[in-house]
Amino acid sequence: MENDDDVTVIVCCRSTDVLSPIEGSAAENCEKCNEKVWISPSSQKRKIELAAKVMCQYCVVAQIAIDPNPTFLEPSAEQKAELLRTFLNTPGEEHEADRGPQT
Image (cartoon, rainbow, N blue to C red):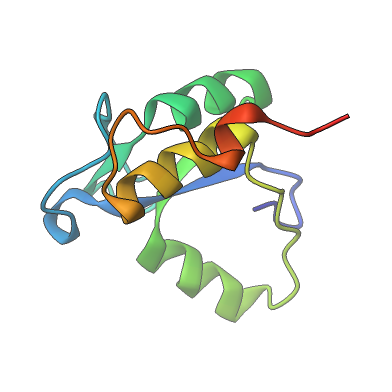
């Protein structure tokens, strides 16, 4: 997500809301409220690549109330693969998102 200041934000779930984070996730603090959030390995990589800030989902929703037209970036192939593995609960199984774009 990007706001009017052209700041890129990685949206992360608060650690209190997630029982089982994505494998390899690290705890960081939300830039707005300072609550602990989980940031996945691929989001950690993207944070560095984009010089992004980390915000919890609640602070992002509050920001959208102020700026109702943010720009959302497409998740990377790695981020999509992590989400699929987590939500489908199939660690180690390859999914279409793991392979990246087909040429």
